[in-house]
Image (cartoon, rainbow, N blue to C red; front, side):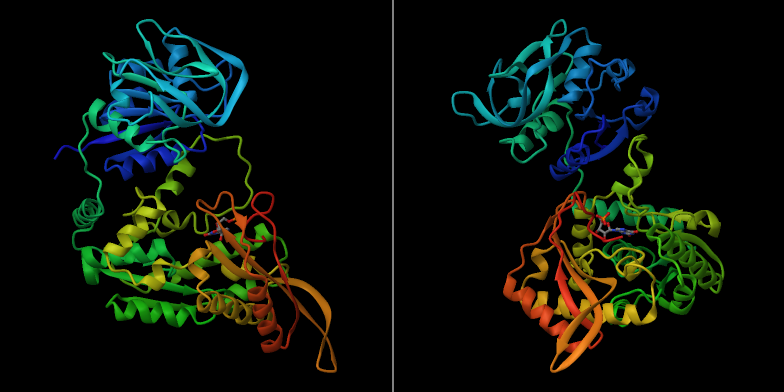
Length: 514
Ligand code: XMP
């Protein structure tokens, strides 16, 4: 079957990845490319359609990013969304103005001229509920274009040149608040671009397995397995593709959750996967001695991980490949030309490992979004307790202990975290949260236990709900539940005198405390 694909050209919208996911959800492979991409590179990829994303800029400013005219000349069907529509209009001789009236949120549009992009869309009196987010608007159509949708405050809320297969929508079909947005995107992808479905879980797995086999042949592959979703799914996939040629290394940096080492080792051994444990907590703890700065801690943990992993890997002879659980958001993030964003935290734990190891890099899930990784993991029969786990950061408890990382503090935190998580599971609350954990604070507080004064540690409980981890709400856990967890922690861990609950969202806070 032909290799159908849609390219999303990224103008910096917060919804760019959402557009890519929606296209995949309707069954066609999609990729995201920066707006600075050269049209010749696009031509080589041979996409069946282009979708121009929205973006935060104004085409009325001379500094803003523009669609490269060469992309239009490729004569591939184009759909411009919001800013994407405006830059199309500008390049094609239309006019865009700053509007006095901004439309944010729900709007009603009336559909006009029977556009193929609205084929089979059910609407009452041709009126559709959509979601808008714009200040600028197209004021004059480019030559030979016609209006296909209008709202009260935006006469040209959609346009088309159906013979050139160029479409523009001022609203966002990719967000769920737009009624039948998925169907509108389907019309573009299937009817206008002529794609056929090629992106189901089974297709993806088969093509990834084939790809791994072709690349790796009879070579040996090593994989750093952390027990998190991404590396675990890579292990399951490689096990299926190349079986005993895969060797996994699990580094215990001493900053894992209570019982985690045994749980991960047993799970993968039971699946018949070759997994080797490297016990390295002493070296991590000693290198972290006296270090208080969060970014320094992250760097030390990342670098030490590389040292330990490299030493362990060298014990295995004749290895050619290093596998990693890189996923698509990591790829987009590192290739984006977003030079304005500031580094809030350095999340890339083990950047530099492939270069140092001098091995060929195998990244079988680098095309997938997180929800796709989970679906594939399920199909590959990855144990559910691994797939449904909350994310756990690479630097582990190292960034959940404020101040210096000391062995006793790790012990206290591990015990308290286990109580919190066990209670969440027991009370059926774990799966409704995106992430929950305990944080160690480097202060002492007075308490009274029995008739005794206690001057001991303070811990904070953190629980959040989020879809994308870019923003998050603090979870409104029942007071009784928080009270029970607090009681258990203070009663069962004699080095804790007080428990507090973190009620800060992201923003302004981040999810982790460091
Ligand atoms: P923040 O704290 O930035 O976290 O709101 C967002 C998500 O990223 C995870 N996180 C990390 N993951 N290495 C990781 O692998 C890191 O250094 C790191 N820092 C934060 C965090 O747990 C949350 O899921």
